Length: 447
Ligand SMILES: CCOCCOc1ccc(-c2cn(C[C@@H]3NC[C@@H](O)[C@H]3O)nn2)cc1
Image 1: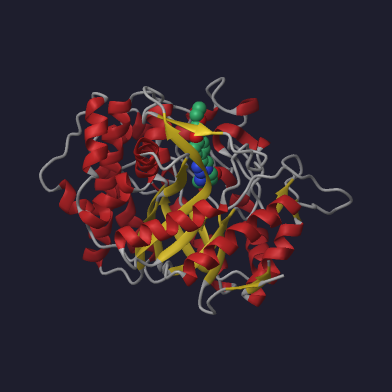
Image 2: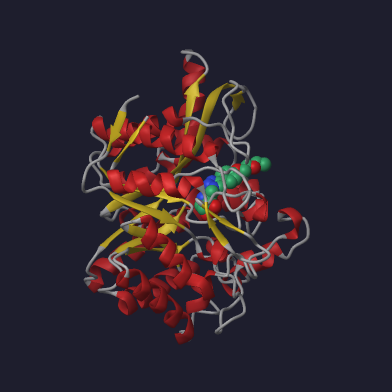
């Protein structure tokens, strides 16, 4: 057995998101979000599940913070529901919405836990979607306005801010593949939305700097890794396109002030015309303080003419899969982290999401989730390798603190280290909770 160690100053934490855990969707003046609409649209979410109750964390946040305190975490990543702050996206601020997040943040700080706030984790006010949503450039200004209110309200309390969670999911998964809200299936629309999201990110970073907010700001793209099936150039190029769709498409504009030209040309061949206005790329290219990285899975792929968007196909390699069907590919975690560092330099990185779906249920009060513990061991070993290779990792936050609403999969897929009984809302610490607690305390584990 080997000891896998971590830097003494590396932060440990857990992550959640507003629509996935809060519930109370009609309480205290909250407006409708696109996920309220989408989840109530027949056929969009498995079993017709929705976030009306979820984990009821809106009312049970004190119990949840107690779980975090016992876990010994340094930081908790949560997201703010924009429709709680601006029920119609813009206009009058809803003080009751701000008051909820003050209660949550104060409880975290009182328990010695650093709040890490995601401003946008997919619950766009429906009123803005009715005007075109992220395809309408006016949503950029609405987002900066919402962010400014949050910065001014929580300056001094919240020191870590994330503008956007997983812009690939917000743009392409939700507007090209169409399995997430609002469920469009239009590549031109999705690609233009990806641009508006990046402009919104950059404009928000500019506002953060102008206000002189005490703290750090970044964004949290989701990543993946595709290993070429062979050393044939066509296979290598196919994997480069697949990775770039998640990584370079969003990180090149932020860190280099330009889109990856080979991907612009690829999208142009698919009929996409990107409308970039004067100054957009300079806005996007604002320096950030840290990069959030979300990693779950990877695969082996090769070139296949006219297959999918990127002329590629995934190869079944017999990798073990989690209960959501994603291959377990810890080498991909190491590869994507070193690739990002090679591409963008020594940018401080927080792993803002990494975790696995295992649907183990309590038996006599215990949840024996060995699969999740093994996944954590494999991916934390990969993370330790990356750190030893020079990747500037500042923290690791696992997805998720508790089972929650997994979007189109509803409540059928459990990612938590704490089990939630959705009928009684009882929380049960899983074996992985105790393993993670010990690892946080030790700052090492035996591999
Ligand atoms: C028919 C093709 O269908 C393709 C489905 O393609 C995807 C891709 C990626 C995801 C995905 C889900 N998650 C976990 C979340 N991250 C943020 C947090 O809210 C977690 O709940 N990350 N990526 C889902 C589906």
